[in-house]
Every structure is written in structure tokens, then in C-alpha cells.
Image 1: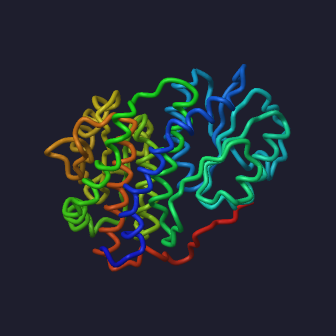
Image 2: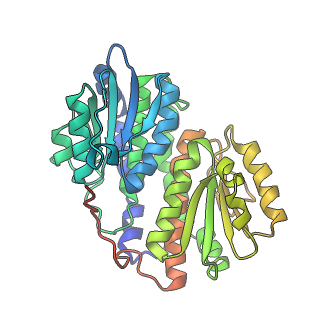
Length: 340
């Protein structure tokens, strides 16, 4: 696995996260200073992997800010030319390149109608950065593999930083300081994802399931598997899976359950029983000795989402190796997708 660009960039994640953690307090202060005195709400703007970091951010930000928080529908602005009043809103735009035209357009229109803009990007000189009031740079370095890895986990951490600037978050600075070490521990164990990939090498469909703070990690893991392998993978909330899609699970459809050990754990345990009765191959990513993809113990659920995302990257990479696919340059994909 180590020969691929994807694997090399995954290995850089502890150092990238450590740099962001070193800036955490100063970045929190910048966000706090930008918050409108009468905050009406928060909206997150993103596409692709960045959108999955935004889904994670929505849970943290809405809870911390105590204000409605939503995911933007960029097409409302770029295709339907909707006129929306964003006075009193804080907009958080995520784009690793900072060059996606529609994200820039949406931010320009939001700012013109009253929003304050925070850009989370890997490129401080990007067009997105130029339209923002505050820029949180990822400092991840160049990312050459098409499947984003180090920029995604750093985006997860950056939106957690924004949440901390808006209110109380469910982790401490001590928890943050331990995060790079936990990521290193996960990366050092490539046996577990390799064994799971070998078990699932014949699967042509799989679901990745979580709920709450790990839902974004489930969506991101499914995308990484699709990008790196071409296998049809879909991310689901455990609640949404019950509303119909569970009917598609049988002995030929695998399900990976991500459990961060928080409020959703009981529901996820119940779902495992449901899936067993449908004879579907099940694997668990959790802080448990019996987990197929174990996570470090005693990590707050919000930060476990980052660790589960790394485990998802490992599984995608391992499946690509078993299937003989090149994860660095999947056919038909490019590093920057210029949607408008």
C-alpha cells in the first residue's frame, strides 16, 4: 500500500492535524470575533468530500451556536438565481482547492446580502479565500491523489474549530492534543483493513452506516470506496437506512457500521441485530476489541469521527489493492471538479 500517493498522503495526517491544533486557540478567537452580535443562523457551503466535512460540522456547529444551521443548496444560487436574505448569518465555505466556481459564486451572493464568510481551504491565495472575511488554511501541502485524505480530516478539524468559536464543544484541548497520536496509532494498523478488504473483495455493493456526529464519516468512507475501487458504496444514517433502503441488504450486500461511542451507540447496536437477521455481511468500526476496524479507546465522539474517517480511507485503499485498482487516478475523475 505504501507505494501509492494516497497512502503517502494519508501518512501525513498526524502532522497536518498537529499544525491545526497548534493554531486552535488563535483560530477560535478569530471566529469568535467574526460572529455577528445577533447571529441569525449558520450555513455551510461545500461539494464532494468537503460536503461530508460540512455534514459533520452541522452537528457540532448547531449544538455549539444554539442557532439553526443548514447545508446550502448551491444550485439555488447558480441555476435558479434565488434571492435570499443572509443578514445576520455566518457562512462557512469548504473547498480544498478554493477554486470551485459555484462555491465562490454562492459566497459572493451570500456576502452581498449580509452574510459573514469563513473560508476553509488548503490554498490561502485561492479565489475563495479572496471573498472571505476569515480564512482558515489547512496547511496540508499539495494533495496529488484524486481521493482526498489529509485535506478531508483537516477540514473536519477546522469546522470543529469554528464550532468552538461559536460556543461549547464536546471535547477538550487535552483531547485535541492527543488526536495526532491516535491517528498515528490507527495508521500503524493496516492489518485490520486489509483483512476486511479480503473478506469483502467479492462484494459489488456495500453500505456505510452511522448516525449523528459520525454520519459525515460514513458518507466520506462510501465516497472513498467508490473513488478508489469503483465499487458501489452508499453512506446512510442508521435512521434513514430503516426507512426503506434496508430492504436492499442481503447476503450479497455488505454493511460497515461506524460507532463513535456516543449517543447513537444504542441505535447502532439495534441496527446490527436487524442486519444480522437479513444475513448481510456486517463489519464494525468502533472502540472495541471485537471491532473489525478498531478505534482507540476513550476518544470523544466528535474526534472519533476523524479517526473513523481515517479507517475508511484505509479500507478504500486496501480494497483497491485487492481488486487491482489504482486509487491515485480513478478513470474519469480529476482533482478539481469545476462545477458551476
